[in-house]
Image (tube, rainbow, N blue to C red; front, side, top):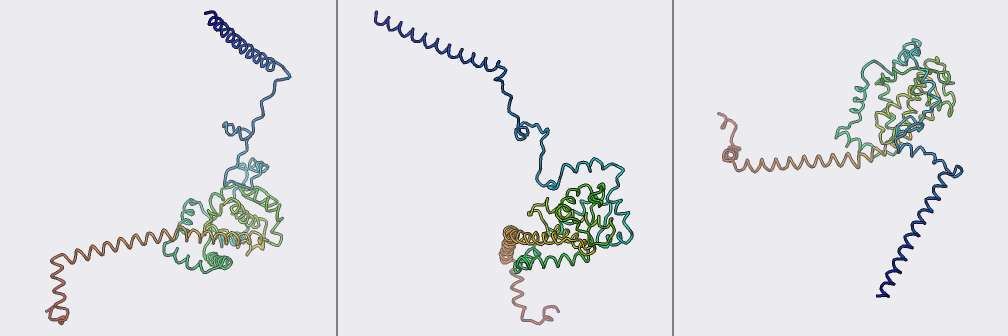
Amino acid sequence: MFVIHANIISTSHVKNYQSKSITLFILAILSFLHQDLSGANLVSKPPKETHIIKVLKGDLRDVKLKTLGSDLFYNSADDQHTIQATSSLFTFREFIRKLPVNDLRILKGQFYWDDNDDDEEDMMSKREDAHDEIIVIEELIKYSTLAKHDFVEFIFKEFHSSYSKKKLKIKGSDLALKIVDVEGYSMPLNLISAMKDLFHKHGDISTQSSYSKEFKSICFYLICKVVKEMHTTLVTDITKHLLQQWYHYIHFVKDFTYFEVDFVWECLKKITGDFYYQQMNKLLCTDVPTILKKRIDELQKNISEYQRLCKSSSTEQSMKEGLEEAMYSKWKLASQIGF
């Protein structure tokens, strides 16, 4: 009993000692933390939140965001132009109306503008890009025989033929834009940065032109519009209609004003060449297989209908009698049957 009692006492003392040790250890830690938190020299400032952390928390203050497909030419310094765009400034439509008579006549020779909804124009362009099944096959055969360089020449000839016959529309959304002075020329607000970038890289490309400042401004509008759209359009979203529009704009400026636009002309050639392979890939991998499957399904359906017709016709009594009579009378004269 003594031994057991002694063991019990010893075990109890050990447990009490361990409990006291743990308690003292916890108290020591709390005391240390209290001193750290209360010490003026030991208080550290919370780390500054990064833009990423702010966005994740939903705080967008002082955070500049950039969305896919936005204006890559945008410069915050251009905001001053936007602020100045009050009702006292006239619109692009009003600017066109004030063109010299001869300049206005030239512009109307290749472009038109009105107050109709731009959605109608967009729908027309989509219908032009939508291919009939037969046209798809024909274009595939036609394009497949061309090298990249030959395709560019071929498609440019097609665009030039359209340029000589069809006018392009200046959209109402552009006509409604306010006009500001950029590098001494009048430019719609949405093309300010494109214009500045153009002058920064290539200088004044209109020095060889003798046209009025107003007409040059119209031509700068066309070139800057092309350049901006090239910088904001994914290759996969380029359509034949868009390429034709770019061609129309560049050719008009090059043909009438002698602007130095070789740099954007060469760019259009390269983009058209890439479009060729994009189009061929789409035709071979998507359009043609889809068309072939549709045609095969239609043929199989027709075959089933023909087989059903043949089977049902040969079993019907009236059809049998008619066939037998036809076989019997086919060597008779027509008068022997009709009279």
